[in-house]
Image (cartoon, rainbow, N blue to C red):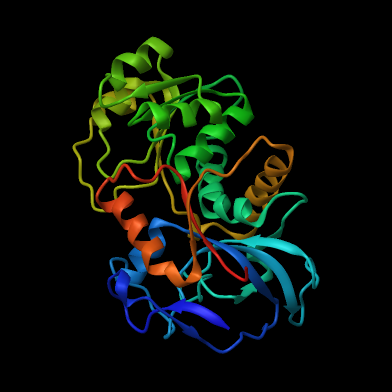
Amino acid sequence: MKAAYITEPGPTDSIQIGELPDPTPGTGQVVIRVYASAINPIDTYIRSGTIAMELPLPFVPGSDAAGVVESVGPGVKRLSIGDRVWCTNQGLLGRQGTLSELIAVDEHWAFKIPEPVPYEDAAACALVGVTAHLGLFREAQLSPGESILVIGGSGGVGSMVVQMAAAKGARVITTAGSEAKAQVCRDLGAEEVILYKDESISDRTKAFAPDGVNVLWETRREPNFDEAIDLLAGRGRMVLMAGRDAKPAFPVGPFYVKECSLHGFVMFKATPMEMKTAAEDISNWLASGKLSANISARFPLDEAAQAHALQESATLEDSSHLAGKIIVKLNT
C-alpha cells in the first residue's frame, strides 16, 4: 500500500511517500480502505517529536480517517465488509496512523458513516468533533438556553463547538480574526461574533451576557484567567483544550467565590464508551445537517508534507491562511 511515513521524528520534510506492507486485521480489528484523512495539530507534534511517544517505525502519522471496511478480524461484532466508516484516535500511544491507503483499526474506535455524508466531511469532523463533544457535554454539561463564549470559532475544534452548542439550543458568542472568518462563524450558528483585533472581548461579551456566560471554551495557547473568570456567570465552567506549556497567573479568590469550575481534558484518554456516545451524536448531526465540516484545504497523499507544513503554520505561527480543517485525499 502507498503511505506517508517517517523513519524518525523530525520536520515536515522527514515525511516520505512510499510503499509499506498491507495491514492484516488482528482480533477485534477491521482494515479500512481510506478515502480521506484529516490533519490535526497533535499529528504534527508527534511527527516532530514535540510530544514524545513510543512509535512503531516506520511510523504513519494521522489520527482521523474515513473509508470502507475491506476486511475484518476475529471477534468483530458491529462492523462488516463494505461498511462506510470513520475513525479517530489513531497515530497515538503506539498505534499506527491514517495517512495510508489501508489502515488496521480496533473496532471500538470506528463508527458507521450515515448516507449521504461524504468521506471528507466525516474525516474532517472526527477528532475535532469528539473533542468538542467531550468538552461540551461530558465536562461542561452544557444545557439548552445557556450561553457560551467560544474563543476561536472558525478553527477546527472551535467550529465544532459553535455548531454543537447551537444544536443543543445554547446561545453562542465567539471570536474571529477577520470579517470573512466572522461570517463563517455566523453561518455555523453563532449569534454574535467579536472581531478581537478591533473589538474588546470583555465589553462585547458583557453586552451579550450581562450576568456572565455559563461556559467559556478556551483555545489559545496562553489563557487569560483574569478575563475568563470575570466573564463567567456564577457556577460558570471554563473548558481548556490548549496551552500545554502555559503557566499564567490564576485569580483564586474570584474563581472560588463565583463557584466556578475548570475542566482540562484530552480526547485520546476518552474511553471507548465515551467515544461511542460522542460518535453517535456526530454521525446523526452530520446526516441531519445540524453539523457540517469546515474544510479549508485539500491535498493528495503525495503532498502530505505540505499539508503538515500548513497545519504547523496555523498552529505555531498563528497564520491567517487557515480557517478550518486540512484534508488529505487517498485512493482517488
